[in-house]
Length: 315
DNA sequence: AACGGGCGCAACCGCATTTAA
DNA sequence: GTTAAATGCGGTTGCGCCCGT
Image 1 (cartoon, rainbow, N blue to C red):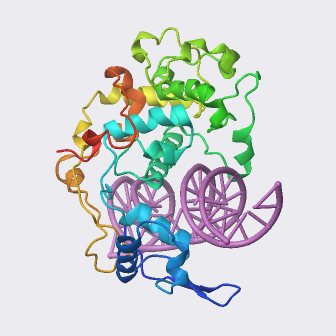
Image 2 (tube, chains in turn brown, red, blue):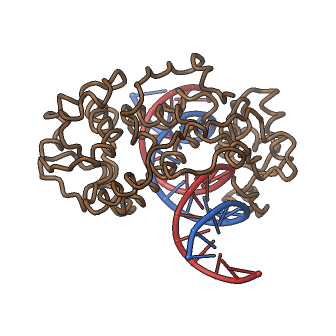
Image 3 (tube, rainbow, N blue to C red):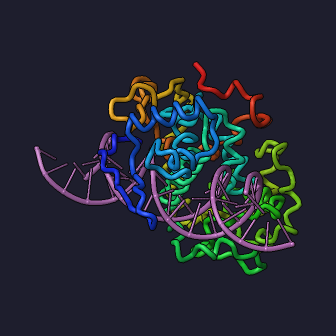
């Protein structure tokens, strides 16, 4: 957590009268959990409570282990541009399958990826001055694609496809990763882009061609982020006013296990020296990283688990 | 210096899926 | 084959910190 949460754990009595602790974990609890995993491995989580080791539910223990205690996590390490690129492309391919996406990112958990993505979505939405979908619109995002003309104002933010729709998903979201740049040019509103069956150009997925080669041919994307014209105009203006910068300096290197030796055990060590020391926020921090993908050669995605050491915090 | 909004992140909840009895 | 428990996953919430005003 960014700030050390005050230790304000709640205790809850369940139906059986057993006490269950909730809220931030204490260092002692972490130690108990680590010791349990050392002895028994990361399984039988519910027996931790049944054995009286911790007043936490099995789910809570598992989550704590997965997100904070397991070794080789890149806690406190900002997503590198490469990781961001991977997330964006895999989200395009798999949809919101965070656990699956996380398997391609050593040291990152599904929670990390999820948080990264939602932050990015919020940032984009704010940038483009469009509302994020409300919870009441939840079902809207599951609605099937139609041939209705796109309505920029009301288009759903997350045309997140189901697993079965992954191909369409790829197509739609692939465009997503290029749409922001395209929006800088123009935004025709042909409705065929809403229909995956009419999007043959978007077939390439992970082996996609460099976007700059296809810009002219790309159909108007149906956006996760409907682009308001006035918003894009502003973007263009900012774009022109600012010029390019290299934001690769944001690569940070931190390999640590912040959960070890923490004073109160309720917070992770925020390692952000790289950011504060030599990498001032640039204007482009406010842009989606994929906005400028067309400027760099696409690289193949890493293979999932184990084959991706280069992605561990470098430098 | 005070304040408020945004951000980042940990952890919870509910549902789905898998496994064991 | 059925049921219950355990586990996994995605969505959401709450809260402290940061930063601009």
